[in-house]
Length: 85
Image 1: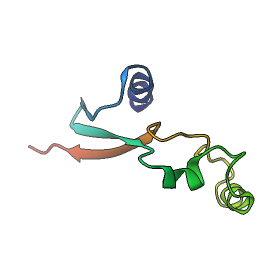
Image 2: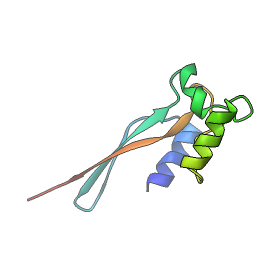
Image 3: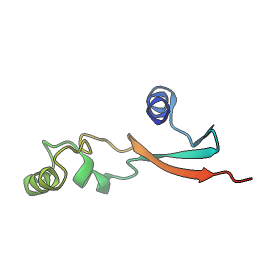
Image 4: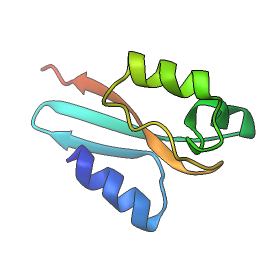
């Protein structure tokens, strides 16, 4: 369900979303790139510091956290609550 919500956010804009699956309630809050400073690690690899790019690739070899612009959707914070009787 989370993948569907992220895809919908990409098309229609991101806003906090709450949904239920059985006794679980999930809340998703969008994470957007808020300011130019964030682009020091999350911006275009062509303009990032070469040492930073090497370190990001070393620490996170499968990461897809670069290539963003200010205001872009980066992901979501997810909270989960279990309902009890």
